[in-house]
Image 1 (tube, rainbow, N blue to C red):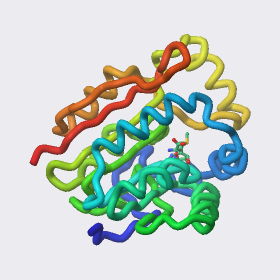
Image 2: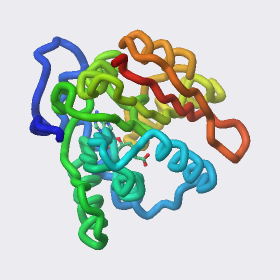
Image 3: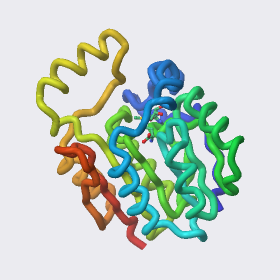
Length: 232
Ligand SMILES: C[S@@+](CC[C@H](N)C(=O)[O-])C[C@H]1O[C@@H](n2cnc3c(N)ncnc32)[C@H](O)[C@@H]1O
């Protein structure tokens, strides 16, 4: 069982952007949380394909951590395939909505907690799988956040991620549209990398890549699905 507390205010002491307060990172996401919850999933077939694929790595004797869970839609779908699932997010509003949804359903073993994926809040070797969906392009420091996710895994555990690779979009978007939107508060800070760079970053943590896929069903899919295993 995960035995380490989730501490949303823990910091590393590292003099880097990773130490930006969680409350500052949450501002954008708190503001859009209700709209995010109300918006339909753009590619439902692709989403369902991802859920199905993730389930093939889960089992009911596993403790699972999700980082950047948003309003909990995915956690509510996947928790029944686990023993225990702790789904976390930096945004109090996202977590509040996730808890509202959970209150209306019976999903034993699922809990939602506030936590910043850039800080060592998840303990060491406490989980059999760490899930990160649409999150890794949003952390402050990719290598640092990956290191924390890998630390949270038990030997043999899986890091399962799906991530928009902004550098694979038309350059107009990362170099013009996103900075402009960010300047007026309509977009969050994002990291700009290709799928190959994300794979390399995961491998640098000593992880063995076991699957690299794209599940989108609507034209070009910039969201790479990567599963990696921590050596036993
Ligand atoms: C694009 S949403 C994805 C939500 C959900 N995983 C999904 O796929 O629908 C990104 C989420 O990551 C959260 N987030 C952003 N930065 C974070 C961080 N440093 N630590 C934890 N969560 C973070 C946001 O609050 C938001 O809920």
